[in-house]
Figure 1 (tube, rainbow, N blue to C red):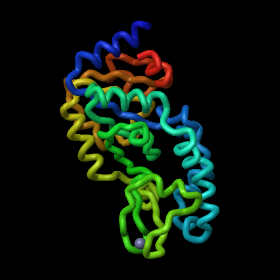
Figure 2: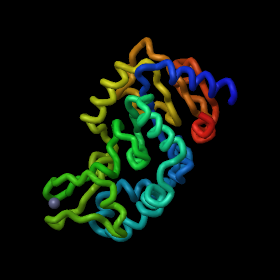
Figure 3: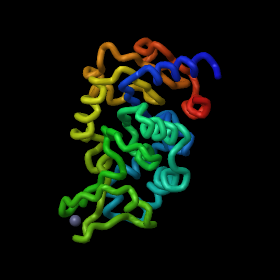
Length: 232
Ligand SMILES: [Zn+2]
């Protein structure tokens, strides 16, 4: 085991309250692109409620190809699974994510704050009924409400908004955290929780790239998270 991993292990073992913050970098090994590898036309298609209404088949196929296929067929990454394991052993108290892929819960994590919502937070555009289950997207076609309306995921109908109850949960967790592990995020949505970070919390960052967390972290591990969690 190298020194960085040993240090991280000690910090986790000695912490009574550990919160993890994850971004796109944790899901790239499942084939979901981060902001540097965005297929922009595909993302624009995914965000278009107009396309959803006028060409539901085309919409579904586009979202399937760039996103849903990776979620349902590749599934959670090694890091997602290890984090769920750590939570299960009571070593992690919460995970805050900006990802909309729901992979933390699919890996078995329970305490997850999806501050941008996800494909598990869905609403009928006609009657407003909620459908909080990602599996409605795994049926080969665009999900439809019992009223006949189109069902749409939160990040799409909210135009990448903040899901307030989830953000509130995240703030409560981060105020109590003794240790914060930041994985694969450049700090998008930091405005939503940053002010609430316990000033005495120790921060570990795992990211091959430089980010603005670099000088907040006591330990910067410049590797992909799967490499690290594989050895943890
Ligand atoms: Zn409806």
